[in-house]
Image (cartoon, rainbow, N blue to C red; front, side, top):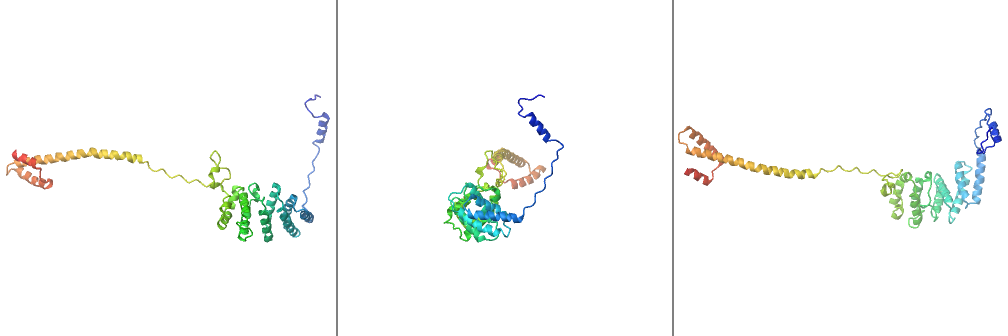
Length: 324
């Protein structure tokens, strides 16, 4: 048997591998996992909550509270969870420099608190305590899209309306909150737009709410190629108005009209002059005809009609005619 020196596989190992993968071997199907025992889960959750109560300042305590929140509907777990979360949040609010991971866990915990339909007074107390922390929220803390919820903005409006937060006293906390909302993706920001507009209308503070920008209000942030980012909901551009008729055609047509009129005027004057001369010649001939001649009578009647139409002739021409 030829052995390739570059092959690191030992021939004996290859033989063992071939024997272990014999086609006659059958794989036994795995049994489906049995559902967890509710009593056992409850016991584990209560033990974890006791540990959190004893170590409230630990980052693991906040993470554990978020994990146990899935059992909040259990009537034996709910009271213990609410009592423990109050102790932990008040302790974390005293940590001078929470880590980014701790801040992320706190944001998820506050989002879970806002889902509670009861204990609203406790939830407001904990939210105010965390918002007043000098390192809470802000533009440096990004949050997963699943936890960028309108309920944060709505609850902030309630806190301001109930004077739990004050517009002037808690200005820094509100600015950090606005900077944090500004990091949300466009979809979630637009979902909260009405709530944000209500805040700006009911609690005027331009230095706070102006920190939240929407893509349609800042067209200069588009890509260099001239197209906006994917997800930016820019307002549609206004359709350009139809171009007005060029005035050049009218400008050029005017001189042509004037030229035509100027050309036609001399012809008209010439025609009128020739007609006048013919009438005057007819008058001269009628004046030279003898009375009683047929032509004289007809021409005399025509002369009277022509005189009534044309009026008197010029003096010099009549004088010339008389002399002739």
